[in-house]
Length: 100
Image 1 (cartoon, rainbow, N blue to C red):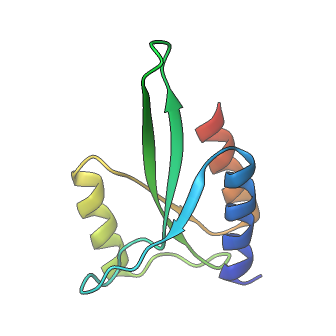
Image 2 (image 1 turned 90 degrees about the vertical axis):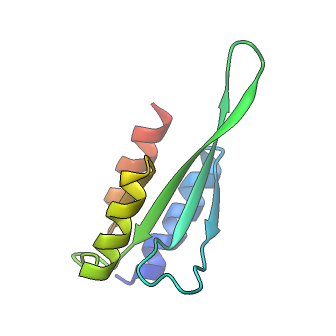
């Protein structure tokens, strides 16, 4: 299975759950995550916000390269959520976690 198959599954499942998926381009920042997943958040008061995750997509069994891991750790240190998804099952677990 290719990384593009995992990415297509993420787009389909996230859209079905009400989220937006956007491809990220980071000029000058090698190793940054591939995608932003933007989740709507509604509060009882009627106020709206969003919750944003950075997502790194990989072919099954592949892991982020060391320079990618360093960038992910910088984002996590700033309080950002960073996920690495390398399979259809990983996408399904991610969507289930975010929608529960």
